[in-house]
Length: 425
Ligand code: AMP
Ligand code: GLY
Image 1 (cartoon, helix red, strand yellow):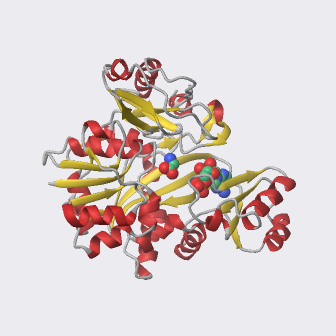
Image 2 (cartoon, rainbow, N blue to C red):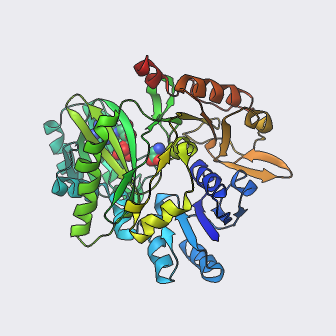
């Protein structure tokens, strides 16, 4: 069985790592992959956004399954094009992926489906948006509607910053087409959690809960990043909240899309804020989270290929997901300067020592092999994951392993999962 995984980050390494353990022993390909995926798969020199390159490869190589990691190829219609070739792919089609590709569409679907979310208004005109600021109070959230690689959300704590954010998006086009439409949104106070659900068109199955750490520095300070670490499960979401999340958030959105002729298949990721007045949706993503996947995959037991196939076939109701009770944590090592412009091409040492720790897996993100050395090529370079009988043990092991790795100027947060450990205490 041939499987293509599209993408080249830590999420894709974690997916490849899980697929490589499947009893069907698939032949794995990763486009473009990284130095970590190269250990388990054939890396293809095709970028995840190069739809015509991916389609050309798929046409000649006929993979039995394609698993799409990032949002860009999903929103560009990769799954639709593969389907037209008669090829099976895990992930939503273009119309369904628009739940992530357009925040204004997502908001409209949520309102129609009665899903709890922050109050928002949509604007294309800067003067009108500025005029509306008074009705939102402060802080206020300004969001580019389109895909902005995780950078399109600004939380303004004063009026001048709010106006500057509106003008930067609508007049100076800092996010290009992604920011020609914006949302002003009510600020929600609370603790965030990620709920990833498998969806087969109508049935849904929640994956284990997780929590990301979006800011670059400890105690949630500094600028937003793609995610500096994660752990699973997230105790802020208690087990008794899960049926409510499924029945009031995930299922109504899938049903609302279906009503519009849009069949959602793949992972539907709800970014939630647990507020004093209940759970509200911040955003939807049309894919697995990064780095949440690096904390979730180590907890899934059994084969993953049947799960992906059930999503494609519409038979998710026949699959029983088996999840280890042991928590998992992942700590991201980032390059000097990230999330601003960062250094690349530096050697990474100590990877074997780090991987030698029991219950630790090193997932590569921005790495490449050059002349028998592993070098950094991205902002988020590695994700060090550990599982253990309890969260504190997993955290201690992840930090012991990451300390064995050296990359000049690199950074990692020291407080991944600290909030959960406090909550459990
Ligand atoms: P999003 O891409 O919409 O998830 O936004 C990125 C991050 O911005 C979220 O993970 C939150 O930390 C923050 N954020 C987004 N919307 C809001 C909101 N309405 N209130 C508070 N924080 C928000
Ligand atoms: N960890 C956030 C995301 O994948 O969007």
